[in-house]
Length: 112
Image (cartoon, rainbow, N blue to C red; front, side, top):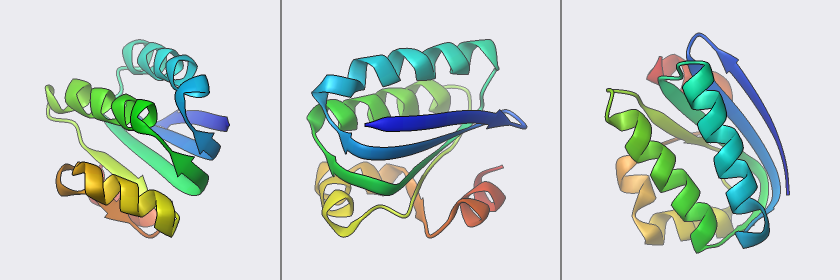
């Protein structure tokens, strides 16, 4: 798995690619938490266009960051998940609490 993280106007944009599984979840979680704390992030946009798989550890990373930013009124968005990843997000219940968008522009307009 690879990722690119940037922050703009207190919104963290995480572009992920590959398989979001146990072997990468802890490293990504640590990096996200560092950026959230240091940059005073209020919102998070996860772009899943190039994510081919997600397991429970990946879901845990997303849910944990959701809980953290929602405590302070922040919002989270998921952008363009592949059908197999979307199905897992849907079955896990994450798509009932996190909004899904077709592209990053739409997500940024809606959550900021």
